Image: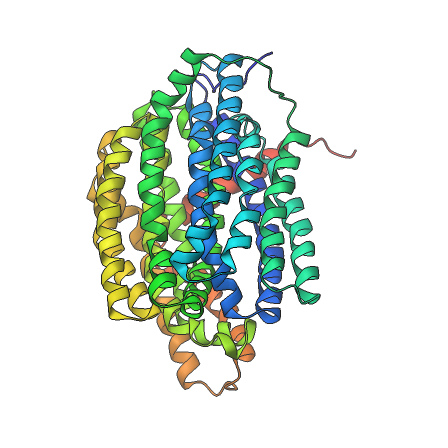
Length: 505
């Protein structure tokens, strides 16, 4: 079997640019389609079900996400980053993740009564036991996923993502329409995992063999062990809010908070998913050229700010219109929580990029140490917010902690490739300035214009207008470097393809 190698160290720049642009294009196309479908499904389920049912599922989803993190053992990233990858590494990773997932699934099912007692929610016993099946479904395709990402086969990965969202959504909505309540959400979650795993097995030619190498497993663990440690710390920092809100504020409060959080994360997760899927293997392929890696990374950070800033600030200004128009008046409590979480979204979009550097350069132990520190700060802040007694206070505490941590989160790994405060400031100030200009303008128009007071006119008129204002600001007023670079690169690629296409005559 021939394993996919990383690109050689002397690979020309245009080749890497082509691979990155192609990967981003296919990943973005797939994710846009997925999120349009997923958002439609989410809205439909929100109208068919109550905040309480979403809150009950959120209680068990937190634990499920943690278990899936442990089951995968960090081997997906280890297989992508490793230069000399052998069949023994692949087989060993598969059998270890399968064993880990099976044991965690069994433990999760046995712990179901304790989970229900913790939340004082008897329905969680059955829900938890059924959801335990996820622990076997997800890890069994970890090796296939790693190989497809390593080979940058993003067209097929996009097809898998679209397929699972459509099929799982059809199952969930059908059951909700048949008045199956919480079980429609459970079925939707299980089908996402099942269809995703089936797609990876269908599109990947790799199959496991009955062999296991202790030395190969140890080599992978040397990289992934610290990555798992960071993942655990980061997971609990990101999910302590759900656990504590569910435990001390209740299912309805958690339903409102989780709806606001998932709405804020919806665009960010997809941007992060597209870029992380592409940028990690791309940076790993040039890990020995630190100057080039720093340049590519900094341009990617500017691109993240370019895309996420208008989305988050636009959500802040139009939050009330969006929630009432899309989810309905029963979700009005989401509005103030969502507006506070927008600040968190801006910070998270930038801080999430540092994982590309840590992992591509193999500094997972440094990543783990940072994870321990930042997680302790975030969990303490969330605890203060819960003590104050409302979903809004939890959101505010979480966002405040992120504002304090993000500059340090960027600078620590940035030093590994020679990046400092001035470099990051230059990369992000333009998108932030343009975003603020856009938000102030559409906020003033929303308040003082003669537009109808109904939510839909505001959304249909002000959202496109905001996009136009932002485009003018980044392209004409501030001449944002990341926008100019991206436009130039795309035009070069388009002209190159046009030149290489033979004339019809």
